[in-house]
Image (tube, rainbow, N blue to C red; front, top):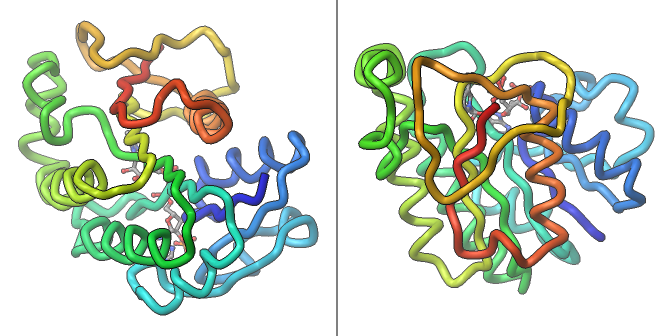
Amino acid sequence: MKLLILGATGPTGRHVVDLALRAGDSVTAFVRNPAALGDLADRVTLFTGDATSPRDVSAAAVGQEAVVSALGVGTSVRAGDLFTRASTAVIGAAGEAGVSRLVWLSSFGVGHTFDWSSGPQKLIYRTLLRSVYADKAIADERIRSSALDWTVVYPTRLTHGPAKGTFSADDRLPMKGNPTISRADVAAFMHRATRSGEWIHRSPVITD
Ligand SMILES: NC(=O)c1ccc[n+]([C@@H]2O[C@H](COP(=O)([O-])OP(=O)(O)OC[C@H]3O[C@@H](n4cnc5c(N)ncnc54)[C@H](OP(=O)(O)O)[C@@H]3O)[C@@H](O)[C@H]2O)c1
């Protein structure tokens, strides 16, 4: 499958790139800084650009079969307008290029999922993550309103642990405390979702 991966240099994005390469996919890694991809750089097609630029994303989307986004703001508590601008660029680019499939990484607690969160989660989402979550909420709704075959993924707190493959995924899951899931498991879920129709037009919550 021809995959365009945004956020390919991030810790979750790198797992997606790695899994896609292992599965025999043809990967275009959309990056700001090719050097940040390290050893994976030789095994992908590199596209250097800014995910908030409609022109850059449109150029990268030509000839792809699916777009996967693991974009994020790292450890920053401010989103700026990364997610709103990138979602607009991706929706436009995918539409123009005739790429219908989009798997987009959001965060549990954003938008409609906030009401399902536990007390400890709500406290963090309302304070530390407020700016990031507000921008993500707008982006996620834009994606759901688009004509694409979207999946918007809502993982709980991410860890750098290994893939366990034992996580839960559903349209809604009960929450207690502040549960986690590894980036490796999130990447596996996202990569599988690109190849299956199961999660099209759904917003799965995933957690250990
Ligand atoms: N941390 C958690 O507990 C948690 C929980 C649930 C969901 N999430 C979400 O999961 C996602 C991935 O998080 P992560 O920690 O694995 O990754 P991350 O460290 O946030 O990585 C972000 C990636 O996005 C890229 N990026 C940012 N702005 C860009 C731009 N304008 N143009 C092109 N690329 C850009 C970065 O590129 P550079 O290498 O150039 O910076 C990097 O590859 C995020 O959306 C995060 O909010 C996180």
